[in-house]
Image 1: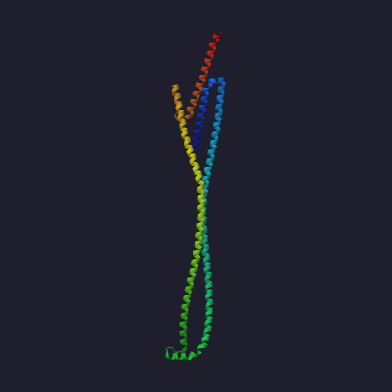
Image 2 (image 1 turned 30 degrees about the vertical axis):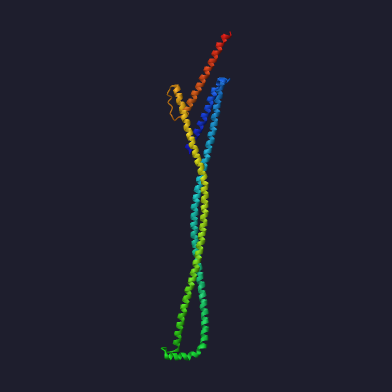
Length: 321
């Protein structure tokens, strides 16, 4: 960028120098109508040249300041881009840590819920068993009272069956009843476990859907921030492209000016019929020699005019006499 800035300054300087040089040549053509002395005109030209040099230096310094401002703005844009990238990386790490902590909290809460539900289920089963035992005891008492008339019937059954006592028949009956009850309880337990598993599955599904929705919202926010950052970068890239195009145009103008200076220098060399040994790419030295050549021609022209005027005056004196 520094190289491109120096070339732009050189082009700017040469362009204004050439324009002022052409203006100076035009003014030299009007010297015949000027009534001032050669020394005063020479001093005025030198004064104008110094003013021109100061103006060019001021413009050159302003252009350099402008290039410094553009460079600082470009550096700030790069720094903001790096900060945005760092912030994105930190956000990703924070999201991962939050996800890990959230998963641990959910696991812990799930275990607590399962433990609580298990205790509640055990308490409920115990209450049911107690109520069932009470009911069973009352029913048995009622049955004893109600079916006491069948005691004789059981004794007759023992006589004609393989059982030896009535109590064996009762035990056998109780065993069958207990087996039936166990089957019912097992069936009820499986049903309750299925219901609990369904409830847990619904809870897990709801939690995961909430997490997915939250992640989608966060993703949308991050995408919006990323789009905003890209929209901020695009105008600066367009501005940088315009600056590069302007530099290219100025480089072309600089080449044209160098070619014009070289042509003038070659014409001057032909007029002087001398080999000046100046490098082709040294435009500053060529331009200085051209300026010196023009100044010499101007001085010679002035001296010739003065001599002609003196000769005319001398020639007119005898005529008047």
